[in-house]
Image (cartoon, rainbow, N blue to C red; front, side):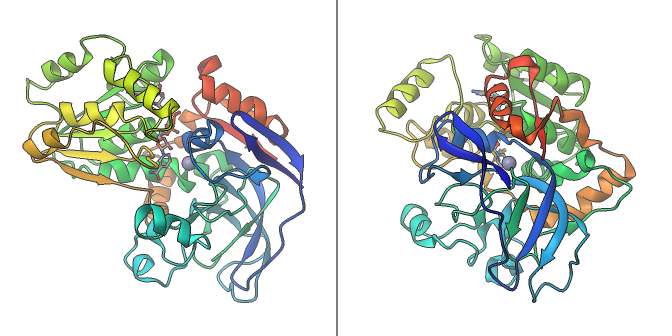
Length: 389
Ligand code: NAD
Ligand code: ZN
């Protein structure tokens, strides 16, 4: 089959690789009908997530048709049309039982790696490094799905692939980030990053009752999308006084909650951003926390900082003093996608959100290398690329 393979920083190739086969009785094989490139894939593309190996198959946002099931998968049959959550979860452990699917104790065969780094293991993720289990991803013609009795979720024929694909990741991610803000009527939410996750944060914050959302980025086309599709106010972080503007817009009090939908590869114009770049280049820190620093600085006293943006290791000049002084609450993590499938599918089916608004580029899987380049450089006003095998 054809698959998108990582080879090195900024080097992904579409190659012929062996078809996946059933390895365990709880596996299923899915024939991919649509897949997408995620901002998280850019962290792999940029080489900032460790433990990638040449030839690893990428992709964790995918859907398709069940073509084979293992002997213990009784809830799926050949021909079912499913979306597949990006975290792999066993369904049985303490964490799965408590709906903390991305913390699953049993889905990461390389548990020892993340136990060393994080103290405990994190769940396996499709196509996302050996630290996250070394699973082949779904930017391919076929994929093996472990614990297929838990993850894959059947979708109705009345909805198109493009309408349901983002249930695999970015819609639940935006939603959980907003839910973590415990939004009350009248609240103002600020979100750093108007990429795909930021755009779903905006939609979700309004669905959850926010009065106002302020989106911060520097890419004008994304800020425009946030305004026109999301109904957000916008600020450009390259304007020197944007942090003051944010305070002015909130009566000097600051947003009730601040969301970092940027993660470890934040850009910045300030002294701290240059410092981060230098330290990262010298391998003295792994992550660049410009956005989360600003989120902490801007947030009102007693507010919430919600972090869907991915962080991987260690960061420097983290203003814990400001967070402590203001009594902030932090919420973060990989999304527990399984939890949100049914309720968010209902929002799509009822028409309260049409997730296709995010798609700017449709390409055949064979052009994935160009898709990564476009998305990385936000060339051509690229927001979201979907790939069709
Ligand atoms: P993206 O790269 O398309 O978007 C990031 C946006 O942030 C870009 O538009 C960029 O211009 C902007 N940005 C950069 N520095 C900034 C700064 N200092 N202030 C404000 N904006 C800044 O990516 P995406 O697909 O939207 O994903 C966003 C983040 O969410 C990534 O870190 C991704 O890995 C993460 N993510 C997390 C989960 C999860 O489960 N928690 C799931 C999906 C994605
Ligand atoms: Zn993703």
